[in-house]
Length: 124
Image (cartoon, rainbow, N blue to C red; front, side, top):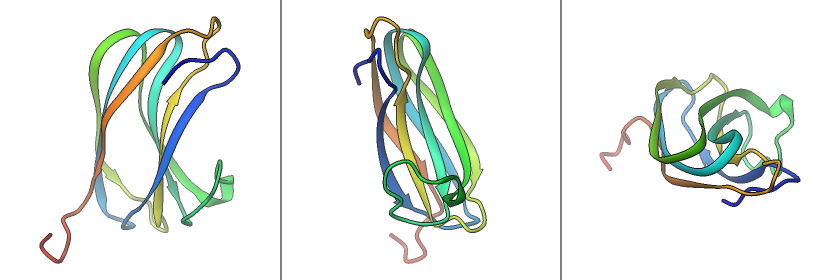
């Protein structure tokens, strides 16, 4: 992900989840020359699926964050364990963010973003 002077950078994906189940989240982030907030991963727990763009507040139940990682860092693993999916949540939006930079330079790399939940009931 390359920095910009004008706006934050964002890549996202939505996943279906099981409400009231416990999940573990982790991500590896590497940064170069990020002077401001840096880069982070955000988990937005949603009441609905298929919320295009930025979900309205009335569709969001809770937000959990991994990071941020700023400056120039080697690969750094960040974890949140024991995340309880909120009652009423049917999906989670996973956002990869990078703050805008005053000079428009800097980079962030993301790898192995994971949201691990309960084992499948069918043995898979």
